[in-house]
Length: 249
Image (cartoon, rainbow, N blue to C red; front, side):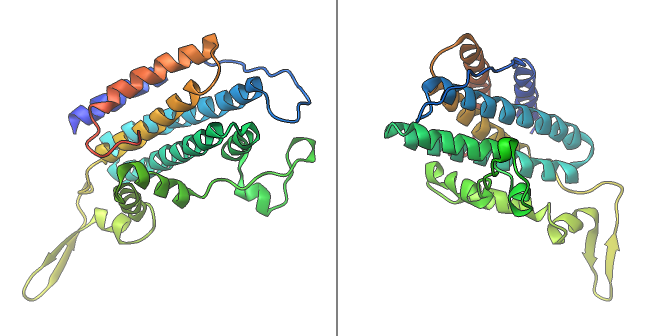
């Protein structure tokens, strides 16, 4: 467990070195998105997702030391980020294989700007544009099953959900049950009995890092893209040795 924590701390340190760029796009009226536009949209998604992974990972590491029930909830959030990034990468790769630049644009718009609340409550975006529905998280989680050739990622996600929902998984962490011949005793100890899910967090962060690394490599080169590639490659190599489940590559 300590090795896994160390790798996550080191990964967070790498993510803390990511640049904070201003990404500029010259407006064009092309029928199909240009490579420049696709690189711009990819960078926005990659930077946004990596920043969210960084924020949640930081909170996870804090909770894992002092508040394990909260660390399970945060690990589920990391798992959803990893699954959605992998699913986006998979869909983008499929569009690129058929040279469908418009399809890539649609995927990137969905994963970056998808907002169920906005859609269901009729809120419009800039220029009165409608928001798209976001990716269905269960569809993204199931996508992780394919490279694993098993349903282990889906089972892991279901396990984490049980500690997030207000049911036995979450509540039973806080008491100890003792069945005696003539009575049942329920004790509430000072601290919960659950362990922080470091292994699950490693897999979730690895899935996210691997996916954004692949998305960056699909774009035309620029100094910013090269810098991001270096950071994501470093994090990928750091986490690869710790993965004890089939990887999403």
